[in-house]
Amino acid sequence: MVVRRERKVRRQRGSRLYGWGTVGQHRKSGMRGGFGAAGLHKHKWSWTVKYGKDHFGKDGFVRPDAVTHDVKAINVGALSSLIQGKVLEQDDKGRTILDLSTLGFDKLLGGGKIDFPITIKASHATESAKKKISEAGGETIAAE
Image 1 (cartoon, one colour):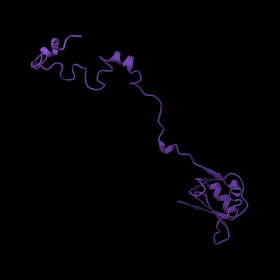
Image 2 (spheres, helix red, strand yellow):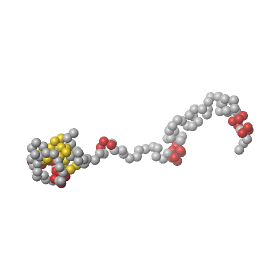
Image 3 (tube, helix red, strand yellow):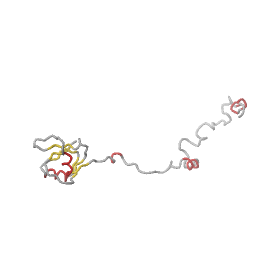
Image 4 (cartoon, one colour):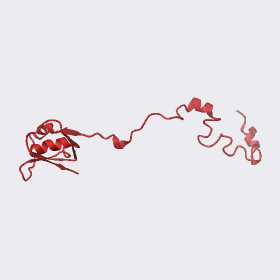
């Protein structure tokens, strides 16, 4: 290593431009090839090939979050096993009231059979489920 007093920068102290000319070369973005990602398709292409392989182009698909929530549903035929052994409140007509949203269900589906009257509170219910419950002497209430 050169002795500190003999280094070029020591000789140029006070020279204002340090040997880079009067028009400000070595000052702005011209020396580094531009700001940011400038030149990645042009004069910095070799850098792009070596270090930035995945910089350009698209990859994959991001599905919107609003669509991805799972709907937890239950069939009409599974209601009897759901209320077995539970103490539930009754409505004014003596039917059992079952609130599906408190049990963690979002939707009532029409699969299976039901043979007892029941009042169901559900945020969503299919037409076939409503029909089967009303035929058994019950009713469905839309819960918010």
